[in-house]
Length: 435
Image (cartoon, rainbow, N blue to C red):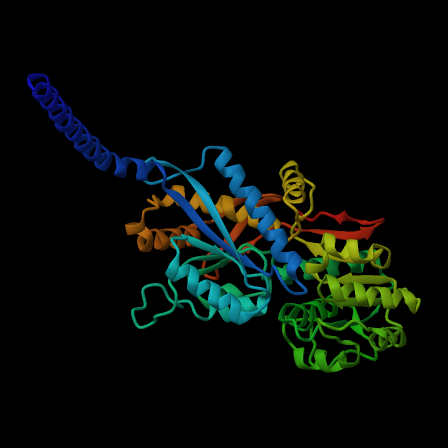
């Protein structure tokens, strides 16, 4: 009995000690949790683009490059927050197709349901134009309930889009400057070329508007005239005569879903133009080029849309594209650019003037976060997003893959270096570097 009592007392003593120890452990754990959370803070970014539909390669390429960029940043130590904490960057990528409603839906979801500091997207200019329209136009306007979340687009390239909101920014080349310089250069290379003719995808905002507002006027500016004596209203200034451009090319235009281009190609052939312009994305560019080759149409000069200076075009129709000139904001002609091209391929994509900007965007975000003292905490999310927006607006120059990138602060646009490439034996070869 005595032994049993001692034993019972001993057991009770051990139990009390265990409970006390457990309570102490819980207390210490509770105190330790905030410190643990501090070390696990992340700089969250959200990307979205066309990962489905006929332009899915653009979203795939952007995601591949963004993934590589985030990995490179994290491997180098991450991002320094406002209190000195080093945080990893974290990417979530969504499919917005090339659809305005989907792009708007993703933007609303990311802004309201995630802790992302900034968005990167979308792919298509039409989707971007609609999506930018739901953002607060002027920062601090209490009467405007639009989204208050910074965007740094890497692909949608139609001129002037970022002016829709002070929360929207783009890192894309300026097509007006690029085509102005391209036709000036082509004038020196082909002094005997006089007439132009062309066509475009009428259901794609970027293709159609760049063709009518930029390409045809810039060709006119440098002495290339539309066959038949020119187009009324086209003076060589951006945007002038745009409706008449579309009327003049109505028999040579097409849609994104078209697969038969025999009628359009016959119109090209009948024109007999010295220079022919195909303002479309890779899939229909290849369709048109193949039909032109079948009909033995060989103009002195062939010019394409910026978006077709891609691996997709060469994969689809390298023989037919031979000789085509395109201005582009990316070519693997620097050590950094070549490295990104290799990383994009390793991640299942390819680097071009659109997707390569995603690499720059990730590093721009790192630079802005570190410069503005972002804390990356749930309770600082609203303030952090505003810091990132303000930081983007304040940027004057950043390092890009092909050189320094300038900023047009009041428009949210970039001033990027560019080169002219030509399709040559299955590759895009740089034929002029005006940097």
